[in-house]
Amino acid sequence: MNYRRLHSWKVTPREAARIQLRLRSKLELTDRLAAVRLVAGADLAFDLDANRAIAGVVVYAFPEMEEIERAWGESEITFPYVPGLLGFREAPALLKVFARIKSRPDLIFCDGHGYAHPRRFGITSHLGLLLDTPTIGCAKSLLIGTHGSLAPEAGAWTPLRDGDEVIGAVLRTREKVNPIYVTQGHRVSLPTALKFVLAVLDGYRIPRPTRDADRFVAAVKRGEYYRPQRRSRLKGHIGR
Figure 1 (cartoon, helix red, strand yellow):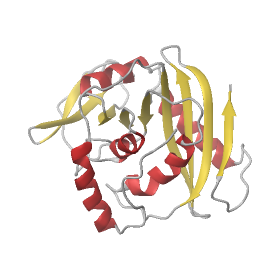
Figure 2 (spheres, rainbow, N blue to C red):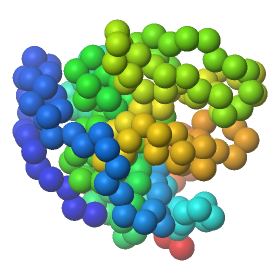
Figure 3 (cartoon, rainbow, N blue to C red):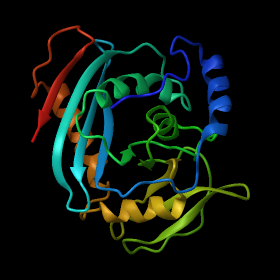
Figure 4 (tube, rainbow, N blue to C red):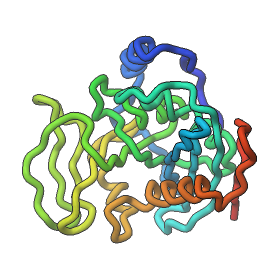
């Protein structure tokens, strides 16, 4: 899966923020999706002692949610942890894994924010623009915005707002549990993002694609997959 080289990764935090402001004008916040037959979940884990990012991608047939393949890779961390600039810390590792997968997804779910971001360009939007692929953010915590009360039943949602602007949705995925924050990434409208998130729920708080990707990279970090020491190239691929 190819990706676009839209900017340098060797930048300062101030330069990175300027890049976000420049690229956000390229985002598409309306639907431009082909028929969705493959979806993917993406997430990362960090081995800070070794200064490594472990990225993982899991691909499924949709709507059956039958797993097709999964891949992972390790990369050196080259950008500091700065809230609001996680795309510059995490996207390079994810891009290397997406370049390895054999099945190009029609839609990607990310553990992070997209449009619901101080500069309207979180990692989910960043990744979608780089891959030129529709993306949806499914974040576990609030980055920016306010919202009204939320009914306790699964499937209830309310708009997430920054002032008068709707920047995402607060979605109850399981009865009486904390909600998640659904946000547009790229080439998806908010109603469509909600529709697809609801379609991949399977009784847990976190949608299956990002939950499986999270468990996958955690298993890699624990040593359940072979990890040669201190190499930056990709190391893992499991296909059907």
